[in-house]
Length: 115
Length: 112
Image 1 (cartoon, rainbow over the protein chains, first blue to last red):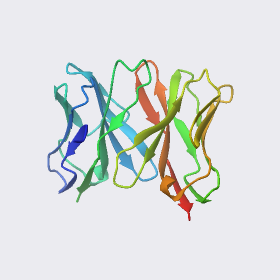
Image 2 (image 1 turned 135 degrees about the vertical axis):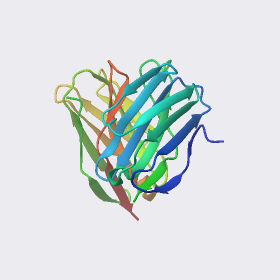
Image 3 (image 1 turned 45 degrees about the vertical axis):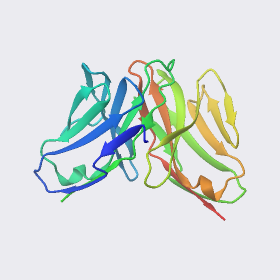
Image 4 (image 1 turned 90 degrees about the vertical axis):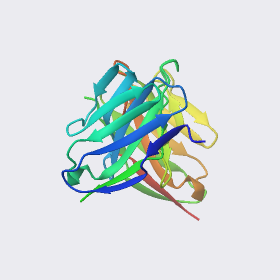
């Protein structure tokens, strides 16, 4: 079984629609992250959470919101999707006890297309 | 400045050759420098990492060289194989926030 799962894996939606991407992990990690990947732009951090009560904005948080429902669940929402949010989205986790290594474990990604 | 600059954007190497990918950074608050490998349709996965108090780290065919004074680090893949064909990302961990800043990635193709 995968340690970090993302649903859905693929999604096509229309401009203006609200959409939620979900991430679940069985690694027992406290830290969770959402990234988007665009060709030629690498991975950019959207939001991150170090525990259930801690939510932080990343580099490109505008147009996105998140919810940390439990230690194992971290959801990303697009309140009103726009075409330039078409991208590959990754969830990742890391262990606060890894002595500063911050090794992140990534899910398989969600390919989102906004028409 | 949290930017990490990565080059080249793409790279073609013959089987058995050496692949070299370079990264540079400005922020001296970075304290950990990992490289991630991503195959098509998959999420990135940690390949190898180094701390700034070490100048080189080797794991099998993969070596990180780190130049603290120049604020540069590089990934060397010796005896490159077609199975190494993937996208490689360098990254830097920002100590104050425990977040990773990634380079823009290098698409490596190892020709048979």
